[in-house]
Image (cartoon, rainbow, N blue to C red; front, side):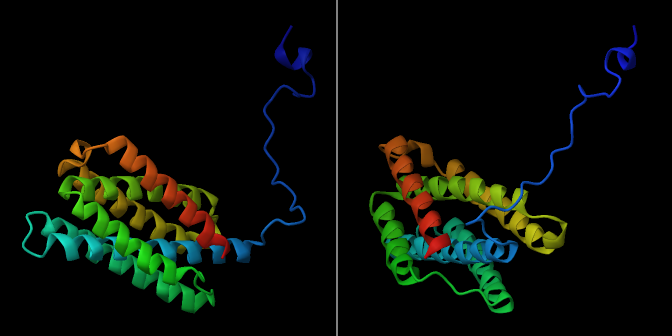
Length: 198
């Protein structure tokens, strides 16, 4: 007996998934994009402040200053891009930006005071969370938002480069590496959640 005789309507074939109908409380596509741009702007702002805090403590002549400045310059370019998108898309920035101004610098400075390896561990933790975050955003964007997806993918690759630099610079040798990176990751995920909404 052939398969078509056993299953004349081909009901055993996998069916294409239909898009889920919007439910009350679901974000509109415009609101979803606004959230993405708002949180990405906040994240890049915070990252810039982390590197400013690290450089303020370690100084411009520190052996790792060149790597930190390289990462800082890339974060600055990311921030400028999201500032343009805020304006173009008429998206308000997060109301928590003054908090991220202080918290980002404080995190960078505090980890640098713990030593250069702790500063690099901070970079690993933040960039791994950003990698996950940008990957989710990229997957959620359809063809109508291809330029935004390309920007996010480009920035994600640079964030992974930062993580790799930090690992090469001995991040995993920082005292209490697992505890330190775990705490920074938890704080970063909370900052993302808050910045999307506030």
